[in-house]
Length: 310
Image 1 (cartoon, rainbow, N blue to C red):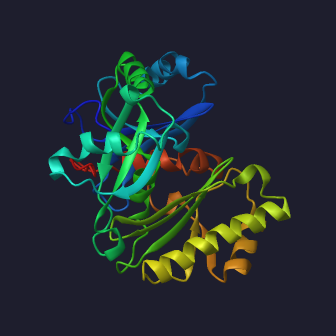
Image 2: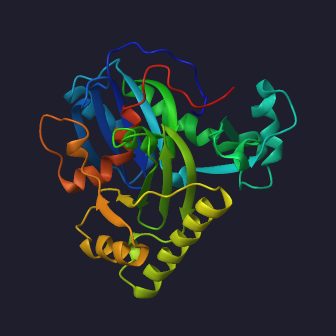
């Protein structure tokens, strides 16, 4: 997605690393074409200082014989902004350079340290046909992480954002080309994503997360934000909602969240069980699923799959 390098794959299969504040998730899909896809490694490792990523990851790479294999870096939402803006009035091959100036006042980054990439929203929604998604991240941060990956003897070939990695995972849930509504509850924010036909139809960050959801007032604010998103999706974008809401795996059962969302939104709410979507040598615990959800989606990136339009 974000273009620091242009690489083709050296190896079969793909590893994926999701770097988050406090650690990183590592997984590997050896065969993404089979159904279900076949995975070999899936684990979360604590790493409180991102500058120590290479040191911690090197031992993991050696232990699992991953030297010189391809990997995809998935960015946690803390490390980038995703904006839906009007497409610039320039030829499409000039979009990336044009949007840098278009978003310079929307992001808190120096213009000379912004890495940008773009992808098109679905063309089925009339409201979005003249818009583009822009991803903006700190170039020096990205380069620093990529340099550390090289030092571990991995071969980084791509950088994906959280939304696109999750999109890859949700395609395994797709049935009859119906939209999938997915809620990922992170520590201090949430991501609401609607995917249909392998494309993102709607994406919204909600500034309420797991840390305070046990407080009734915070839970009500989360529900209100979700309802506003649904109203916008149905009325403004003129799209129909399905009856089901899928929740990302959680570190703890948090059964009250599923039950309360079902009641408040009048939707059948259920947790995604990754063990039903991807096969690993051992069943993944709820904790591993929660930590590695986005990394697994990143490892499902298919050959040549790049949503960026350069």
